[in-house]
Amino acid sequence: MKRKAIPLLICLVLIIQSCKKNDTKALDNFEQKLVGSWESVELEDDGTSFSHKELMLTDQKWHLNVFAYSDIKGHYPLFHLELEGTYEITDASSTVEGSWNGTYNIDQKHLTLLTYNHEIIQGLGFEPCGLTYGERTNVSNGCSFVESVTDCAVDYDLVTIKDGMLYAGKRNPDMCMPEGRPESHGSPFKRIVEKKANTTLPSPKKEFLRDAKIELLSENLQFLEGPIWDTAKGRLIFSEVNGNVLWQWSEETGLSKYLEPSYYAGGNVFDASGHIISCQGGARRVVKIDSVGNMSVLVDTFEGKKFNSPNDAVVKSDGTIWFTDPDYGLLAVFGADADKHRELEGNYIFMYDPASNTIKMVCNSLSKPNGLAFSKDETKLYVGNSKEGDRRIMVFDVLSSNTLGKTKLVATIKSKTWGVDGLKVGEDGNLYAACGDGVNIFSPSGKLIHVISTDFEVTNLSFGSNNETLFLTGHEALYKATIKNY
Picture: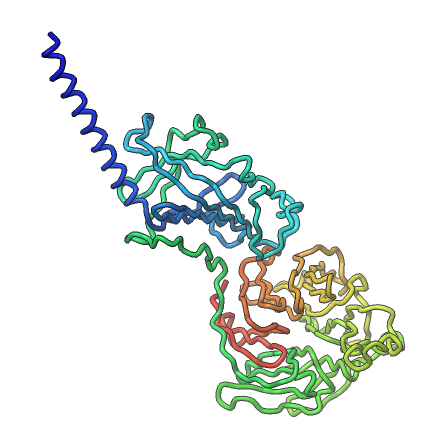
């Protein structure tokens, strides 16, 4: 009896060892297949937002990018959440056939805010987190719904690869504990890189906002402003403020002077007759320039008082001219003594009617109004306020009486260098704003769609012959950006 039991015991041990070897080999094979980069097949509905995920795995570390959007098409970014750490695939799942149990240690969490919308930021619970738009912030200690690493240092997950797709466990709130490990799979990931990844984790950076192709057209100039496209003659006219010149540029002839002196003009706009309406900040007036360069003063006072320095203008379809009047010209000429030469108490927005030769002040509530633009249907007026510490874009209802009604905040601009300055509304109805380190593009409802990042400070902008060409002025140079129609 004993002699027969010994061979049976030996056989049982050999079978167990063989099973362990097979399990180990299967585990090794699975781990090798995991290594690489994976991404969501489509945007996932998270209940209150939609997300695109990118998972990067080496043989030891993992990095997850979560890009959250407010819409199913991914046009309106909310935030970018990054999680990283080490991981281990431990054993075969006893509850889901063909799956493996994984333990993901969470070492760090970072969050990048991708919206300016205050209501959305408040709704996400991000206000107390010390976030700044576009800046990657360490939130390992927690931020709103993002748990701290201390409270949730491990993620117990379930993972498998089937038909070339990676499936992780369906998310639930208890995955920080072993008993909270999922018992079903969530949405699939498709492989980005078919070969084994490097042992060094790939950079987590992602171009979540598409940039334009930017071409330098002319440089060594002195503070550019007011670009406008002349469709009839295929040329761009713009101001060199400090150079006291209006320039013209075209593909055929390049750069040449259009008008000198320009009286330190800033903003320019065409009226319905093709005349240039120019804000001559140095002369503290708004003028009309005809096709051969003859100039006539339209308006230079309000209630008998000189303007500060008209800055930017738009022309409504009824012929009325709307312009901002901050004190930049006074500051440039008189410096610390600017207030001694000020005749108007504040920095206002005016509406001038050439037909009746009347002017009225339509806004006195902004600290330093600058660029402005009408919506396509002219029922809204967008205005950029450029005072340092109070940089924001507002939108006003335009009333039938050519006055301004209800107003609301479109966005707060966090640029530390410049703007918000020039504004333009494209054929697509979107608002394009010069915001210092680039162009911010907003939907008509005020949601940030994209940012065209630049390595120079954008002062103003103008569309060319179509909605895919954007001319940008900077402090010292003129540029052309080729963009996609957002």
